[in-house]
Image (cartoon, rainbow, N blue to C red; front, side, top):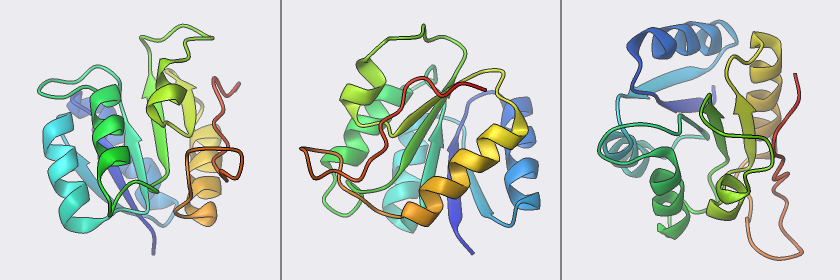
Length: 140
């Protein structure tokens, strides 16, 4: 059963995401900030990371960069789910995010993207040979 790590500081959103992904058959871990998410990622090596952008202690972009710089985690698929980005903002993809979804995101679309990245598995994020879909934004 694939493991999804959710980095989300809003407890209500984290609870909804956790329920949604557990019902889809995933094992789910939750971290309330980017720093704790990085610690959990190092300790547990999730199959997919689902991160918010705005979080305390380490935001989603900083978390993505830290994951990409870590030798054992650099190929982890990362989805950014945010209500604070504007279409066309290239910073998430430059940081190494695979897919950006805008809040509110339909449940079916979120499950679809998580499933796609879980099936793709670890993959490179640099250069022409990258298997990363690097899509921003994904439309509903």
